[in-house]
Amino acid sequence: MNNKVLLERNGIRFTLCVMAAVSAVCALGVNQSVRQMNILQLMQGLPVAVGIGLAVGIAYYGTMRSILPRLSSLHSAELWAGLSWFNLSLLGTWAIVLPLETAQIDFIEGFAYAAGCARLIGAIYVVFGSSLSNRKKFANTFVMLTVTIMLVITVIKVSLALSLGLVGALSIIRFRTAIKEPEELAFLFFTVAVGLGFGAGKMGITLMAFWAVCIGYIVFYKIRSTSQMENAYMVTIYGTQPDLIARTGQFMSENGFPCEFTRLESGASSTHISFLTELDANSACQVLGQRFREQFPENDITIVQARSLF
Image 1 (cartoon, rainbow, N blue to C red):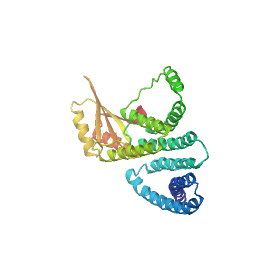
Image 2 (image 1 turned 60 degrees about the vertical axis):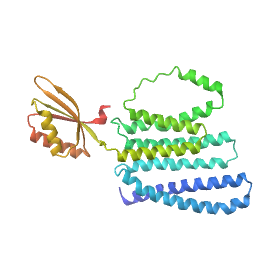
Image 3 (image 1 turned 180 degrees about the horizontal axis):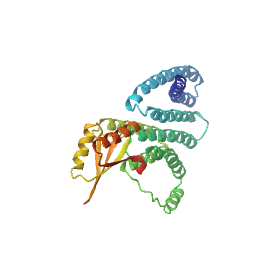
Image 4 (image 1 turned 180 degrees about the vertical axis):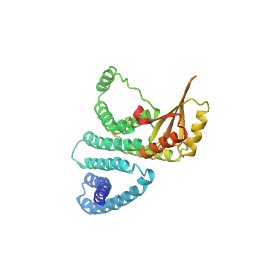
């Protein structure tokens, strides 16, 4: 990435961070002055609010620029993308100063917050999730799911008849696609809960719970002892030796490839061993295949990216 593109990207991130902080601080201040019908307080307090927002935004950007690469040096751009969506959604805070009914203001705010939070949830799932399936493709559904739940709750919360009609309508729907891993189900429930909270008009509580869950999940990811395979490959070895498992394990350990055995097929004439290993790049895959052929010329090996199996 050249310096011009990098500067442009950092400039956009900085602008969104500052804009989010200024929007949140100024909108709350303007709303308070408007409610009190105090124009003098508005004129005096707005420059102060802008200054506070700028200071908070600059500190916010500096903190995120320091933290995000440390959380994931390889995928910090994905985290920044999710955070930028969230920052952009904070423009919905200005809805509180519009001359609209409370229900309409709650809808505008909730819709913006739901989209931003869902995109950030997707980024966290892509970077820190441990599922072997295509996390990026799965996370792309979070925004639509969250805003749909938010819209449904907004519509039915004012009418018992509509809520009963929704129960009848959903009773004819059959979801036949199985959730492969519990982590996927947990993130689906998380996005649904965020949509429910914003749809019910509980903006502050939902935002606090959202950040608490996200930070807690990242902290748990960092401190848990089990190793994560971000670039998992399924390796299958075919041979006839009775001690093939022990020899393969020793080979992987000596060459610095972490592995987790998943399958063993042993027959009268051959033995098949399958295990997961983590390879950082295609060159590492070639190195593994080359070293294996040199040490086990009589055996065959197959290496397949694990995510392509799901």
